Length: 120
Image (cartoon, rainbow, N blue to C red; front, side, top):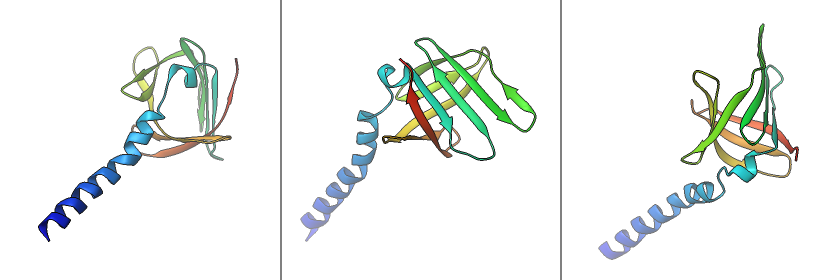
């Protein structure tokens, strides 16, 4: 009987690691980011990002605040990080990607969904 419990515990651990391994294998790469155009799916907030080889052109608007500078991006430990001149503005962990949308987890733990396209 104890062997079955050990086997079940090992099986449970292996299966619980599978989604995180899949996400890591399908995580951010430079090929996925360069040329990427993201538009947040949200009726109350405008959040768009256009990625070039070295830069990010964000358009972020909430209430009376509009941001449209030139930022930088990098991939660090599987996370897509977006920096202004002075600080980390956003960090996205890729959760999923289909033919129309990209789903990410923000650094604050909230899930966001973006429509996407590529400009090459």
